[in-house]
Image 1 (cartoon, one colour):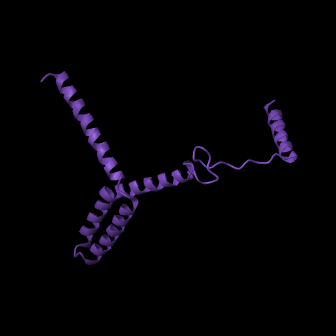
Image 2: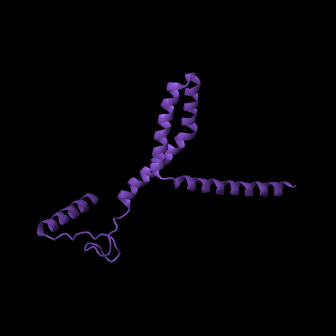
Image 3: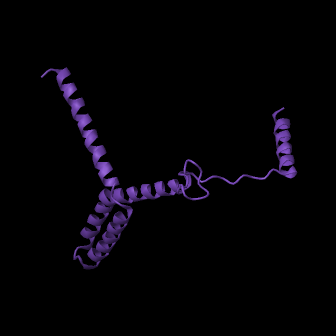
Length: 137
């Protein structure tokens, strides 16, 4: 097998490996937050049980730390990402209303109430505009 064929084969294997990794990440991200929380809670209970009952505490402690660092930290990270995404969605995704709601516009988004123009509000706008214009000079 020539070097070009070997290089081509290696690139192909790398693409397949990346595709599999992406699929696995998608599968794991589909696990619900409640399932992850429940599993982490059970893991905490198991740690306490093992530390209380295992005769070789040092060995048990090492294994627990190894499991925490290598395995469970991944699920904690996934949970944090999901919670952060949920928080962001609350602020960034517009509130959808049913079209039957009186406040809903034609797009289904909530319409903002119109402010009434008063002489005071127009004066404030003008003062702000003049202030910005003065500072720009």
